[in-house]
Amino acid sequence: MTKGAGGLSIGDVAEATGLSVHALRFFEREGVFLRPIPRSAGGQRVYEPTDVDWLLLCNRLRDSGMPIATLKTFAELVRSGPGNEPERLALLQEHERLVQARIADLNASLAVIHAKVVAYANHVAAGTATGVWSPTPSR
Image 1 (tube, helix red, strand yellow):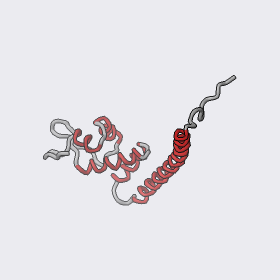
Image 2 (cartoon, helix red, strand yellow; image 1 turned 45 degrees about the vertical axis):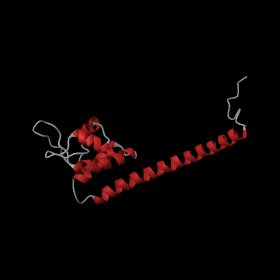
Image 3 (tube, helix red, strand yellow; image 1 turned 120 degrees about the horizontal axis):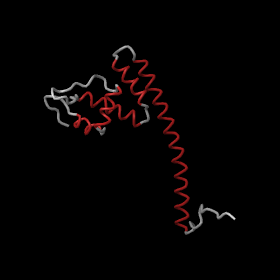
Image 4 (cartoon, one colour; image 1 turned 30 degrees about the horizontal axis):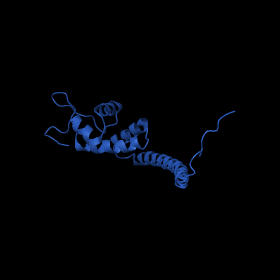
């Protein structure tokens, strides 16, 4: 990522964050950025490294399942400045709780899958895999 005298281009930010140019424009329209993104004399968006840092956090929040509406609320709270830290904390704690619940569900699914892998591996190794969970023909 290169920063010229005019800041970072939308392409630079897309590359640095893994977001598409379309997603960056969507985030801007939705009010996810912490500041209005200025434009160059030629009309191109000009980003700063702090915008990239914010977007990397937003990516993690979105990747972990935070809805865009909640992300917008979080951005509004941060944008409004000091004094609402308890609200930000509550929002993040609730999201953390939801992510932990999803992880617990995934771990339960993983345990079932792993048991099936072990069972099939044992049958394959013993040569007894034929017919394991084969559909029974209806009569």
